[in-house]
Length: 271
Image (cartoon, rainbow, N blue to C red):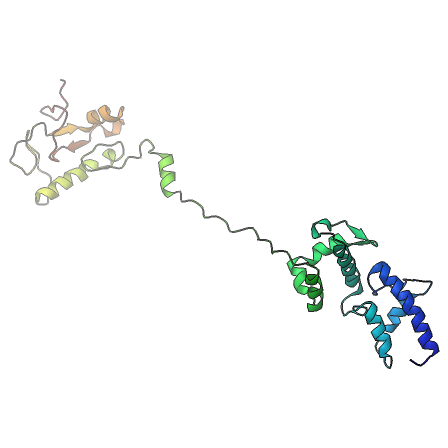
């Protein structure tokens, strides 16, 4: 090497840079950093400018021998935190010990490390950054499972609702051959008689009065059949019967014996 004033100043600053590295484990020093009373931070910043080392490959080789990442392509703050974490792990510290709040040289390396391991931050790093973290045993965390926000299907209320409501008084459905509170007052007698006539294939016209002891359209005797008083029958089944339904008569010609004795005019005889 040919001696020169520039070369001598370089060697003096290089010695200061080596001291700074031994204390901070990186040459990505802030511009205000000093060592051996030398403004090593400003000196390194000047050497990083494009073309500053042109014609001096030996200077660049000397800096790389101290710190291979003396001029990285990522932010200087990231390089400083990484260097501190690397040295802590090299001193047999574990990742579990580097929790948020652990500080080195004024840097919260625990919080920085937790952030780098987040999947969204890890994918945003460059290949060189991820390679360096993996080389010291740092890997990204497994992505967190998002909670299921799908609303559960509402249970059907069709069957259970009807069961819970039960059968309300007065909501019985009128069935053929039965006397119910609703339906007897609205022409259920006509519908029952019409059904009996349709089964016996009788011609259209006013219904024929059934003889005592016989069903309509049939020559076979029927015991206990006839026309019963609907109001009396309903009183025995459902209690009090509305006064406007007292005159309704229901033919009992459905082929089923009546449980009540029937008089000449269809009234219920006392036992």
